[in-house]
Image (cartoon, rainbow, N blue to C red; front, top):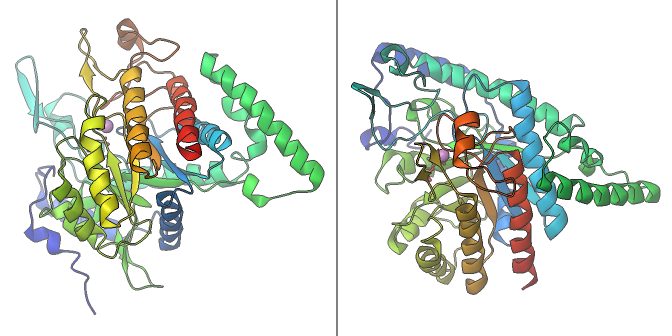
Length: 446
Ligand code: PEP
Ligand code: CO
């Protein structure tokens, strides 16, 4: 029997890995992880691949959203529910406006590890290892908390399991019933996007009552598919959570349905690309503004040599000022080669700023500008703008600037909670969904 070369990555450089102080403890944790039940099932992963293939063909739209970095402390019922509600609301806005099926996917139940631009962080005259996500070390700035602890990998697994349990309950247990579109708006503070949503929910209600009157009683309206995804960053988490599917005798990462490779770890000869090329999950790759046509073509050859529908998603994150310049050549070369990966936009990671009062933030207008650029590029090349990847929370935080309820720099001092990148709050997310819908309608009708 072949081992599928799953350990070939050990011979290659793996960037962005923690320095674990205790190798014996790490090995013990890896053994324990390898014995845990899968979080997701191969059959679900295959379903997702089929859905993404639809999106790549222009017949669906992917909505992927959640925290930049999930934390153990925030894996509470309320916070998870608010994030799910936000994604469901955005999806309904997109679906109702564009008449396209929307594939819902959380950056959830596994998004516990972060790549960092620097290994160390200095505050005043103290320098400590950088925070790499709750799966690795603690956010608190003390030497004890910042030391990498492999036990955290197990805690990441268990927190993912309980998060996923709640996601499954919310999305299949009646909460996601399309007859409850009004309910999803409850508990959020009044704001302009909220009102617009209420009015649309009224229209959906009428459509539901009409269908009831006609005797349509579709199970499809009661529950929804909801997939989970995270960046495949930590080899010591992903490798032990990879299993050989008994139906097909092929390897699947079972820590999430969809795994993406980050901008900092997509080296063609690196560990991440090699390892993930060997598993069956649909994969994403982030593409920043320095990506060349050659990089993209070689990534396709390595990760999707058979050009399998739904296998590969390119997530462009160019920045609002660069997207119109940098994206067209990549999309054009891929299109001309005959390949049809899914293209989605991440309008967050290329638009980071530091405010005058020292916060890491993003301007809502830049986010929107990048989204518009993404749609323009695809319209001009005749390709499908297939999805949106955003960092969001269902809570009323102030981390990104602007939006029609204008978050300003002073508000950041009061309601900034992210331990990593700034997220859109509930209202900004909803507002973005309405704006993206306008773009999507323009693209599908042109
Ligand atoms: C992220 O998605 O949180 C991230 C780090 O993105 P990127 O790899 O695009 O910088
Ligand atoms: Co981020």
